[in-house]
Image (cartoon, rainbow, N blue to C red; front, side, top):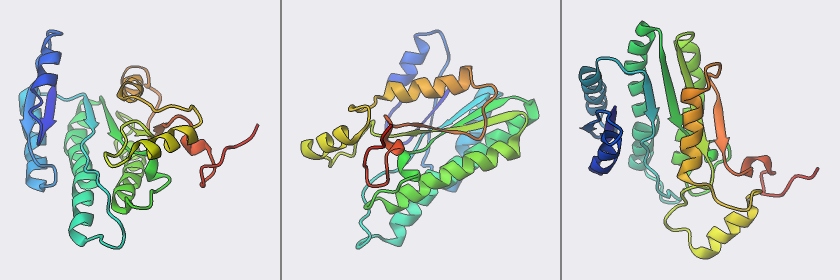
Length: 220
């Protein structure tokens, strides 16, 4: 297993993997830098010899009100959230295709389908992930399966106070927030049991997108 990190050490995850008797390498790199993306892919293939699974999880996320949105912020979201996973998938996916086996999973976001007001470039980048999932699924078929998981209210923005959190919870049909385990289990399904699934985006949002655009409930 290869773990990519940038600001974190990754050692805790590495040790957890090693407890199961598996090897885990850590490769550090800035995915906003195209050269680092290529290096990460190259080193991952050199260390393992063959990669069967790629999870594209890295992303930047912070508010960008339209009144103060800058070109630099737009580029930051584009480079890390859409360009980096594309080039990683391209470089590693080609190797998977040659071996006639592989699975790629993107981590998207519910806001890629229903954008939030103050997160425009983030939402656009996650909408791009959904389109990228379908495009690569076709490009790499029939040997590589490409899917996405789009979390809903699981890990909320740091600036969401108790009042806003409670409002979001009560507007969620399941009346609770999800957990990282909900996302991990969905990814695991795609890896272990989703052998006839490709080009799909699984929304794990407690029913949020089943509501109307204004958050109103649907009726039976």
